[in-house]
Image (cartoon, rainbow, N blue to C red; front, side, top):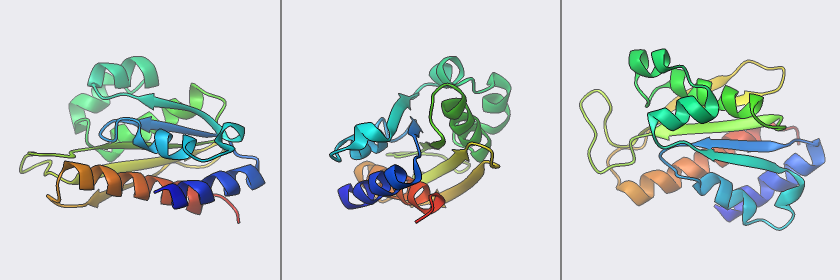
Amino acid sequence: MTGGAAALVARARAAGARLATAESCTGGLVAAAITDVEGASEVFECGFVTYSNAAKTALLGVPKAAIAAHGAVSEAVAAAMAAGALVRSEATLAVAITGVAGPGGSARKPEGRVCFALARAGAPIATETVEFGAIGRSAVRAASVARALALMLASLPG
């Protein structure tokens, strides 16, 4: 993970980008990966860990109606989380992650389903859902961190 984070920090520095994270199932691991890199303070603005639905609403402005209609594990909620992180910070690029790390899940929201969103100043929000499968809580979280870093990296010029 550190390799992807190091590349992200370098590319963000070159692009003059400021980064923010909005995390649920990863519990701050993306922010931790970025801030493990020397020089991250030049590009990392902040991280929001919003594990509960109430925190998603209070800290990121995720509409309660979106959570009620789509559930916390949805692209709609991920998009609202990313947009909220961008609006509530000085960041120019924000990633959001919400999912079911496990163990458990349901037929509708199986273990290993993770929704991502990427918000950039002046651009439409991009979303995607990845089905990592029932590979275990730690593995789902690690794969989610790697995917979030890759999404941010791919969105920057370089």
